[in-house]
Length: 185
Image (tube, rainbow, N blue to C red; front, top):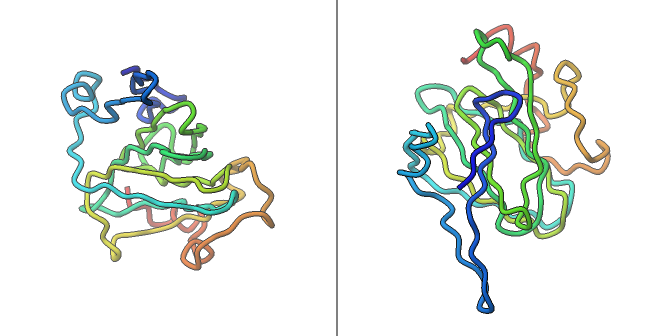
């Protein structure tokens, strides 16, 4: 397993080994001991999976408030996504900054999104399947969303706004300025 910090070092790309032969492949996508050796010591309690039929399905920017804040490890079993993590920790030197990475089944990479980050992704291919581990169970009353296209964040998403499909919840997300008035982290 290879680990690589992004420009915000708390967010990391993970590269599990993939062993292929004529039958197909085998990969250990998570190993608590290996991850702990790289400083990833979070305990994961729930696995989630999403499927998006079309490119342009955007989910995010989501987070959960304490005590239900979530660390996430995100991977793509089929397809490809543009994945974004926004630092929403008010005392952080990277507060309001974001990092992105393309996560895909072809690259067989993963991304660690620590608690204190808003997370979102948009699908880049049809029939994209995303799997992610979380360190706290989904708790609707603790869930929050920040606008994916907030001008204060300036994230250059790979799709035009008219080509993005959002949930009703994400259409009603708060602005980053609203978040800043009463930060949850």
